[in-house]
Length: 400
Image (tube, rainbow, N blue to C red; front, top):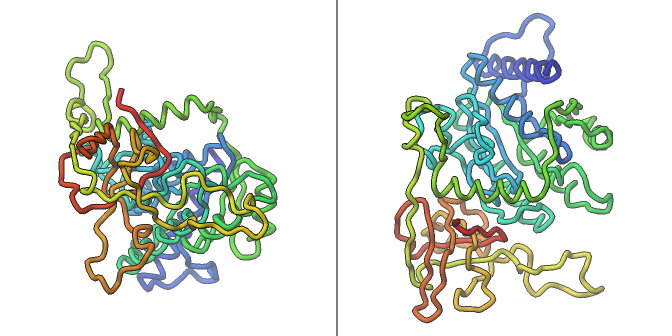
């Protein structure tokens, strides 16, 4: 914890110097330090506590009493951030992030649970990747990372003082380890550095990765190695599957928190525990009401596995329409990301526009009626889906 606290103090000094420059205050005599806000990329292997480090640094910043609101970026699709697994997202943090449940590892979004706590009034910006592993479609992940970076840059231009708070990027373990011939992780690390204008790389408990980052980026930015927490534990794949199911259940039904024994009317932050439960809506729609796409082919082989001279008939970035009437559609129990409306101006349309749309909600297909050509979808609230589009990935969930 001493190392983490020292790292926070260094980041705090960067914030103060940046805010001083924005407000036009003169620097102390002899101070020639750079005045860039902290833009931190946290890397580390599996079971190293990267997410905990990110939350710790964000909580230290908002508790400093200086009005900081750092942006917390999650590019780990297996975790999902403030949405569900399969998503990458970013949100400004205004209050300490609670860690009461694995269902909400980075706090609760305002759209998920009606809570009065500031930490649960987060309004994230979400893009849909759709898979747990970044190697499944690294080109798509690269594009989504750059989309997040562009949105953050636009936000910082509108709020110069907010820019001084900086940002913290949580990454998947695949960024830290893999075969030396697997270059996709290097490309994604470079994409994060470029998109978020990273100036500090924090390596958690991995000497080889630290040397690798020092060699590649040590002359361009600051690379810091910190030890992993002694409280880190390894989790098995079956536990991860249960957590994914729990996260999807909590997204649909809210956070069900049981009060301790002996307490009949518990509360959390002034809210009754019963108010944290949502009532999802099961809606029957026609096949044509919702346009469903899959990015690339579901069984697409890696590029280096193709025969010599062979080319793909479907690119990794091409949206492919999915016909629910097809026996092999794979839509039953599939998790769908409902996308925001496309640009109404037909002159500004482009083939891959759907890849750059943000997520407005998550749906689950619970039943397919081939005879009547209807889908039954589960959503957190009721609303019309007619004319909207959605993207399906590889996540599935059954309501139990």
